[in-house]
Amino acid sequence: MRISTTTGLLGLAVAVSQALVQAQDPPLQNPIQSAPFYLILKSRNSTLNNAYLSPCHEGAAEEALCPTKESLTDLPYSKFFYNTSAPESGGTGILTWNLPLGESYVSQPMLFQYNDASNVAVPIIFFTQDPKNVEFGSDGLMTIFSYRDDTKPLTLNSNYTAHLSRWYVCDTIPTWYLYQTLAWAMGKAKPQNPSCQKVEVYRKWA
Ligand SMILES: *[C@@H]1O[C@H](CO)[C@@H](O)[C@H](O)[C@H]1NC(C)=O
Ligand SMILES: *[C@@H]1O[C@H](CO)[C@@H](O)[C@H](O)[C@H]1NC(C)=O
Ligand SMILES: *[C@@H]1O[C@H](CO)[C@@H](O)[C@H](O)[C@H]1NC(C)=O
Image 1 (tube, helix red, strand yellow):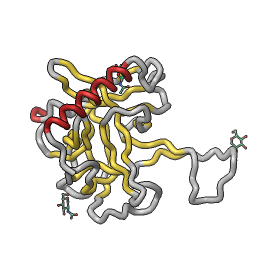
Image 2: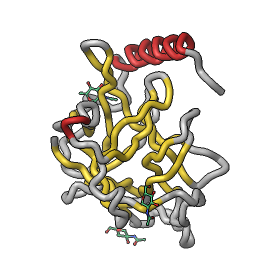
Image 3: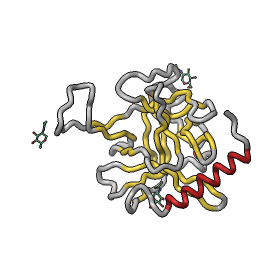
Image 4: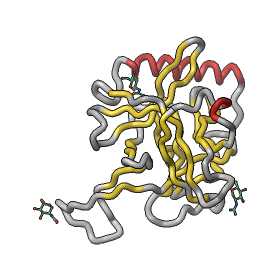
């Protein structure tokens, strides 16, 4: 499916008006926003190692996160923020990005786009009431907190906790563009998408 410019602009207008509605009703209570930072990849593949994640256009006000080796001076729109409801002592929060809008901007969260036919989820930046919770370790590693391990017999009141890093870079098509983007493997199996390469994602303060 292709989208015409008019439909695209209309979509943007709708998305932005939704954002303005949402601005009065944010998903987090009194979000505390971190200082800006970049997201940098670590990988055994030198092509991806030390690449930055940069928002890449997927549709009206919708971006995936694409690795780039461009220098930071050429990446003015690749700064992210971390919104939490409590000061950053543990707990999780959401990754946010400021969508430029004329002279101003709108804060958008990251969510996961799931595909029932795949174990690969694609992080995208878009308006949603259901953003993905992430966390950052003391070394800056971005992880997802898990309190359940269904690879073992389940018990109620288990004390299991894990800080998962199942990030990959894969060829994906979240909307209608084929890009190499950040991705997340659902579960502990390898991603079924053969293009996926393992990466770790670190926060680097801007
Ligand atoms: C390293 O990553 C690049 C970019 O995705 C890819 O073209 C290349 O095949 C990868 N190299 C190896 C050894 O996997
Ligand atoms: C993130 O926090 C800032 C500061 O409170 C807020 O203005 C912004 O709307 C929040 N972004 C999202 C996507 O909730
Ligand atoms: C979980 O931790 C609590 C408090 O430390 C302990 O009383 C309980 O036995 C633990 N439960 C399991 C299943 O290990």
